Length: 198
Image (cartoon, rainbow, N blue to C red; front, side, top):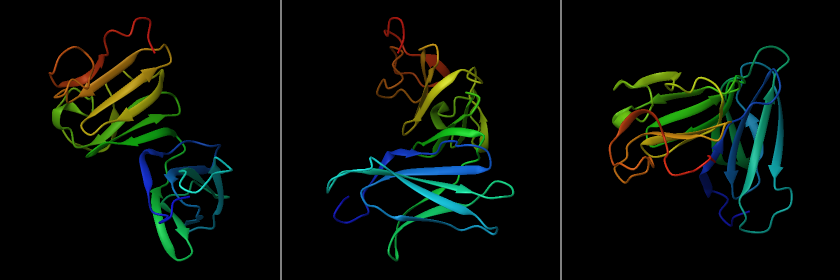
């Protein structure tokens, strides 16, 4: 736990699916907190900490699982230490498996292995092959199934398939797409030079 209880690792902000009728939100925080969900219907919240044992200054991951007897909970979870709100996280629909945040866009991986993205689409960072911003998740071209991992950079995205292929799209100003050029790409493009894959 950190001394201030407010430091968080943005890259560890992930949401993942757990069982029917529950939505899960997770954040890496440097402090322990109690989970609370603001819901118009009765819910139950379970809070898990990983690693279970930690020392002063070690980041820990808090996972709040919010369930309801009827329907799927929606809204946010607040992580608190006494009256202080350390962080909040939006509950993710149980159909989604993972989510990551870029500068002004988001990407998610569905439970069936499809890549989706939304937000600002400058430099093709949504991977949709067009220049349009999106206010709701849309399919990343060519990655509608078989995706094992997805990540969002400041203005690009990357995904790893179950077959070990790595694809990136968006801005390549610094060569971050790994395709041997510094040209922006609006569709997933294979990262070169990885041999048999990752």
